[in-house]
Length: 284
Image (cartoon, helix red, strand yellow):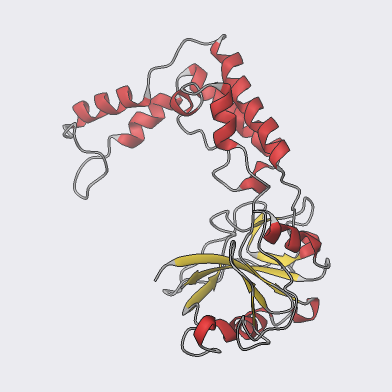
């Protein structure tokens, strides 16, 4: 058993009953309760993606639209709000699919150039590791300890605060935040250009390697999709149609055919603006 993520597509008429409509669309594929055989896929799911940043970016100006969907509570009843500019789904017309590979390359290049430019204006910083070592010594924490343990002091938080206070690191992280905010870089996921330790993650790489690591193949790349017509599509596999008894018995042409990595995302970009897209995390 493992986890996977999928985007469920619903007609605009499902607005107002989204949870029930998702349950109906997912039912044929439920393990031991659905159509059986090839359709035994999942046994638990939850609408999510807004709080962790893996869901959908919201079109600029639509952040307060009540039609947007947000994370449902966890099994223990706890929940978190969506990150700014993110959601777990909503009408296609409110979601921003403008993230592209070409743009991510440009943004990554600008992030690396920014470090190179500022490095010429400020003293070279000490490494984060050196601050951690000193913090451990000050607190009496064994040098071999690599993570926080209950009952032990935390040397990492003050070490990182001191590391960030260095002129080059402080100035770079502030400028990087401005760059990412202006570009709405959260469209690529919250880990895009995540450079909390820039001396290592930016200054420690060539420009080409940095860009290669941070550029996105094709936008966000939502590749697992349950289509409007009930086709369950996982990247690299033939579609499975809920209207039929299995792949061998299905006479229909699939909505998505196996092919390029971007096939699933292209389908999502092409659905009607009122179609609802819902991001789910499954246990399969």
